[in-house]
Amino acid sequence: MAHEHDYHRNTPAHHHDCGGLFGCGDEKGTGVIREDIKDGAFNKRRADRLLHMDEVEQERVDGFLSARGRARRQLLRASSFMSALAAVGPWFGRLAQAAATSDTAAATTGVSGPIHVVDSNKDTVRLGVFDATLPPILTVDSGDWVSFPNTWSHFLNELEPGVPISRLAELRTSNPGRGPHSIIGPIAVRDAEPGDVVEIRYKRLRPAAWGAVFNNPAALGTGLLPQDFAQGQIKYVDLDLTAMQGKFAPDINIPLTPFQGTLGVAPPDGFFPPLSPGVTSSVPPGPHGGNLDLRELTEGSTLYLPVWKPGALIYTGDSHAVQGDGEISLTALETRMQEVLIQVLLHKQKKFQWPVAETATHWITVGLDKDLNTAMALAARNAIEFLSTRAKLTPLDAYALCSIAVSFRVTQVVDIVRGVHAMIPKSLFTGELRGQIAVV
Image 1 (cartoon, rainbow, N blue to C red):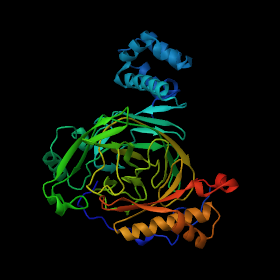
Image 2 (cartoon, helix red, strand yellow):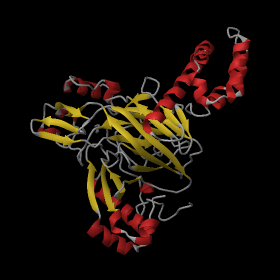
Image 3 (tube, rainbow, N blue to C red):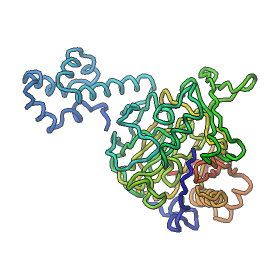
Image 4 (tube, rainbow, N blue to C red):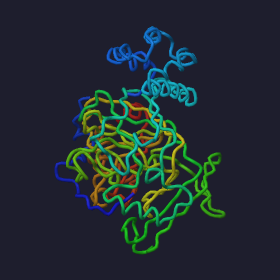
């Protein structure tokens, strides 16, 4: 999604002769979950607070504290315990509710391990920015899962069937510098430091039963061809989630491939002019990922993001039911998600400079710049660097292989910073070499 604000092109510090994917070959190789009631709610400070609350009976407090060793599920199923939680205060009720929701998520998704549940609400969602000045809404450990039920559509959930394009244009112009995206975050990753890589595995992406594709009126200057379509338009599409198709028009059905248009970490200082210290627009993608609009990031795919700030600080939003490469009108088929489920893993000191993606069939490198030619060159250099460091090719042979077997696609041209992604087929490699190639 684009905005008319003019961002500077990457400074020389962000360009590398090899594309900088792996630092030119330099590789050094809080939600309420599982033990939550014990370690989250019953730490010493909170226990002391409970013991000094006049309105809580001492014997009831003692009951809470002695419950620390009881099995979590048994604890949550005890109706008397749940009733007692309400007496302790809203903070404890929220802890218990999150744990119960986590149990439900684990049962319905079939994953094992800690699952944090992050609702979309006024405390977790911001309009059109990555705000690194906010305290994390959650801190996760490497290997944890995060479930986002009922995500918000654009403009803090105002986009929904029946809303006219004039209203969306009004919302855009009344929030200068910001994107239209409803951004959830930040989520901190424990022990993440600059130079690390955060791996995001997409487990489940289930959209709502409708989508919208639109282009703004020409006066806003967004999209690839604003001068050609002065009035703007919004088109709502019903989605058949059983057939996984969208009914675009009579006899025109669009296969759905849901993905998050935006998922990233806090960006590096100086890459974009901030709206204010620590606050950047959600519109342009960059070394932090963000609004990549990479349609391959569907269920089963993986995104690797370089960490630029302590804690990494993960943000997501901009849910898509489907998108064509280029995203030329300005939007994909924008929607809400009934659920986004991801796993977060931390890799120490991998020294990436750009995001990398992986699917069952391809490794994907990206190039991002205001100039599409420069974005193409960066994607190519990153692909060459990937092949020379991972497939044991000389740079010249990697260059040749890219020319005959790697496809370069225009990711999007509407987010100020344009994108190109290189599709490296895994099927090119066989035997021991195939097994040795890994992103991290």
